[in-house]
Length: 463
Image 1: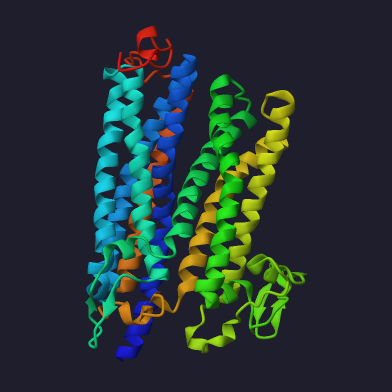
Image 2: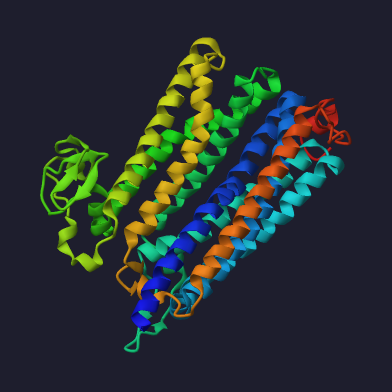
């Protein structure tokens, strides 16, 4: 009976955690990325005395505040879930990763304080003084993201502690925990993903507006700023992801083998694009001989570990989900680079955004596609680590709660998040509609939209 309860709870807990994490990560990404976009627009507005750029900065700051506030709610739910769904995990390893959550909490509170100062500062501060109040928002967003992702990195590459004979944690070294071996590639990969999601989501909104005939400078600049940043970051993200894949092949070879459907250890391993992982090999995929070995070790003679090196109970499942998620993530990353090349070539030739509807359609689709790519990346990270919650130290089934009612809480969380998501969308749509209809919500901004910054505030210092 206890075994059946544990098995049922494990599925329910994993589904609930996946749902809440998948929802929260979108808001968290916007909370990290939006402040950077608003500061770029703010900088352009001050340097060029551009009221349209300042208007964008002000509006984006309000959207950032909404996403940070809603993200605080969903993040709080996640914090409670660690203790409620995985009590054995938090009981044994809480003192190990707790310091990172403490740091994340500090960064979050500072971010909330400074975004409030920035928003109210439009009415009370001069140009450059106000601009600098936004810089801590960007720094705190990055710091908070570092702290949370470092916990996940530690779960993938645990170090900085020892276990005594009874399995209790001793000799915790916070520095080794924080700067574990997975941090150098997992943290930048996630932070870049957050910026890419924000950039292409924002660009997609303005692309849709332009497709509907709104070709004014507000929409053009609103598209140009995030699209430029996103297209610059896309190839950087691709290189970071490539480094991460090789590190996983070395440090978590069974995860990598499951992602690429490599059953047996051998050289000259074929890369499959798409397809299903079966006991008889990959079915339905496009085969490229030797490419997998080449990507792992820069030579087709590189040996790639197969997942048959461990028992079936230690292999991630389902492998087809891992394989397709990884392929989708890489495919979208490649498509974003291609979109950036298209944009860059036309800009180099004409100093203008490509005017074809197909380009705007591609940008409009890129927002949702990038969000799905990020979700696919988390599937690869989390499902690929299974059956371990702490890699090769603690199994997920050992960490799950034995309490009844997990499916009930899952249902309640789905209802809560559905209401929260609906309310967020309605608020943002209401704000956009009022802005679009020309209602001036920001008439009392002393140096902002509509009149350009006065000469004193456009200069250096705080005056």
